[in-house]
Amino acid sequence: MTNMLYCFGESGNAYKAALALELASVPWAARFVDFFNGEARSLAFRAINRMGEVPVLDAHGTILTQSGVIQDWVMDETGKLCGDGSKATRREILRWTIFDNQKVSGQAGPLRFLMNFLPEDKRPQEVVAFMAGRLKAALLVLEAELATRDWLVGDSLTCADLSCCGYLYYDEPFTFDRAAYPAISAWLDRIAATPGWKHPYDLMQRAYPPA
Amino acid sequence: MTNMLYCFGESGNAYKAALALELASVPWAARFVDFFNGEARSLAFRAINRMGEVPVLDAHGTILTQSGVIQDWVMDETGKLCGDGSKATRREILRWTIFDNQKVSGQAGPLRFLMNFLPEDKRPQEVVAFMAGRLKAALLVLEAELATRDWLVGDSLTCADLSCCGYLYYDEPFTFDRAAYPAISAWLDRIAATPGWKHPYDLMQRAYPPA
Image (cartoon, rainbow over all chains, first blue to last red; front, side, top):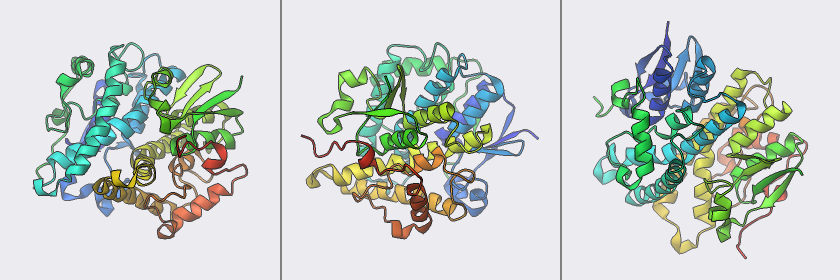
């Protein structure tokens, strides 16, 4: 029995977990969640994760949910993707992970959903504009940080980078234009140049359009 | 020199840090941030925290930002508010902390801001309705969990509770009605009955209305 990751391709949150597992060389298999047919909200899935969300990692029977928790497990299990592994470094990684969950992925995920996976006549334009503004503010924080350094924490790729980049490789429009963020764009290229890196759609099965 | 927490009363994120410090009996002093006059976005403040946010803890020269990171530090320093302190328990606390930052506080904070701290004619009603729906979905997850247990993790108050309750004691309307969430309401009463508990406005100076 290997580590089983409940996921689907459109989820940048699942991608954060899948990419960490992949780059840390942890054996894992994808268990597809049919999100657009409501599987993540089903009673059966909520019995696994009451939060009704992917990713969920079944690590030989230990159930871990929230991408940041799965990344924490990967860092502990492998000693990889956590720089020098010191408590101070781990806290700095956690700092960016929480910032990402609230301000970067936390805006980009729903915004991309509204702009791409809802029928046009159902898209709340005022909400799209509001979330785009919040995402821009967060991206400007990332841009300022990455203008001064190659990686968010220390001098190597860590889970801080793998959290903040979670939604930024997707081609579907969500108001993120790489040309407007040169430091972020160069950083995304650095991450993508890491041996073993894969695009989310090459790591996980797509759930859209629903069957 | 004591531990200095950059904060203001209306910030539930600052409250999560202040309440953890207070209940773990860590000596601390508040350093008021004049949020509504823009101090958190000032160059001087961004030199302390590029994210331009409170809370920031200056722990004898070590700068910690993001409430979840400050809570992580409090648990490590004191061994309190983390149940049995096992890695599994700490991960479960982190799970709820990240869920809170993205789904509970991450919605309640901006929603409460829009509904109370913006002029009426500037409130984007479609955004308010959208965020209220997202907050309700997160509160229903909390309600379901708390219907089965007294505390979110283990059998005692932990930082998981102190994160998820961060915005829920405020009286300003943000579409949260305790009567609609009996398990959450009873849990908030349990937290408030903890010796040393204080309301955010009794722990931190209010910044609204701006001078």
